[in-house]
Length: 101
Image (cartoon, rainbow, N blue to C red; front, top):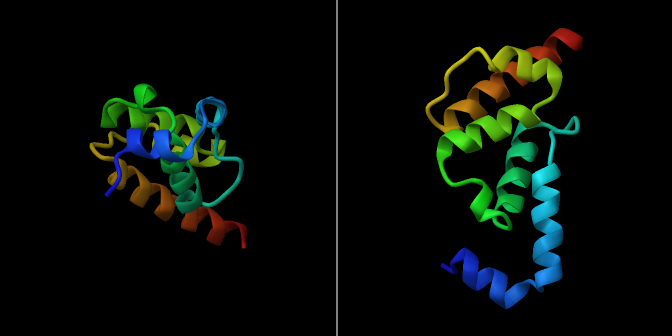
């Protein structure tokens, strides 16, 4: 498996790296499903490793990016892992979709 640094050096120009880091820093949920949001978040976070040093920061960052209707249902809960947050966010998303339908 290739390390993040090796990936950056091999496949990304510094301009591309900077552009993706800025994309990551501005990334918000934008109405996509939770799994797609988490996947994009993870993909873009490779370009900003200095901004996400510990899991608690990742949890807070993800919470800040969720849609308002999801965020309201999640902020009061305490999450220990990103996996736990994503699972609860997916369940909440399913409930929201079912109530709208």
